[in-house]
Amino acid sequence: MAQTHKQKRLSAWSTPVLLILVLLVFTLLISVLGDKSLARMAAQTLIRVTFVVGLWIFVGNSGVVSFGHAGYMAIGAYCSAWLTLKPQMKELFLPDLWPFLANAEWPVLPAAIASGLLASLVALVSGAAILRLTGIAASIATFAFLAIVYTVYSSWEGVTGATSSVVGLARYSDQWVTFGWASAAVLAAAWYANSASGLALRATREDEVAASASGINMYRHRLLALVLSAFFTGVAGALFGHSLGVLNPNSFYLGVTFITLAMLVVGGIGSLTGAVTGVLVLSIMIEGLVRMERGVEIGETTLALPTGAQEIIIGIVMILVLILRPAGLSGGRELRLRIGAR
Image (cartoon, rainbow, N blue to C red):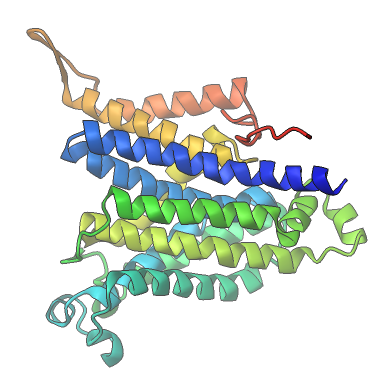
């Protein structure tokens, strides 16, 4: 019996190892065979992996669809900007920052960690209120949280630059830095999913009444998952800002919310494998469609998709996946090595 339990644990932990290997192969192929444009695409894809895996920690285990995680991403992105921008730039773009932030010039790694921690702190406070709700009411409350964050960050001119872009961020988020954070997110997600809290939270997802009758504190486990989820979402925001070198509140609103949820749904919301699969499949598809909209030369002929075809095709793909595979491309199953008994 003990050996069987050990085999199950090894099989479960083979999932993050295999997913990290997939991400490593993806990163190596882009680095060796791709150009600078593809390298930037790889970095953006791995940032999305960090975000979507962070989102999955909460949504995949609790069953509560969150529309508010882009708000945590914005919090992390601007926190990193406050901590890493040169004081002269902050004086120019963010003149009302508090003195300890105005004079701060942190290294990028501690700033990314601090950004994730700030997002987690906000998640703890906001989640304490939001997660007293259940079902669709909780999802609507997360959308209200996103609207609040967007309104504050797009209006607080002296601290966030409002609708003006904040520029001058160090562009250190290449494909290898983002690969490291994506791998960390995958490991953390697997650890939480296999922890006592993760198992208890999935029990509430399947049957809230039965779980409550068994003594499971749904509120506490949901809040813990949200706090951990927000950390990696905040880090993804920091990486995003340091990938483009520019921040604007519009980058953290409806667009990123719906595309990341689409990736989670297409891949399969029921598994960590689905979260990673959805990001890779849709990111590669988006990159291909963008290049086709610009035009592809075949001999003397240039073939180009109409402008806006990208959104239409992605929408069609989502509809087909929901019809043909309601559980997503992964079918809700994990990528695992089968470890047999000896």
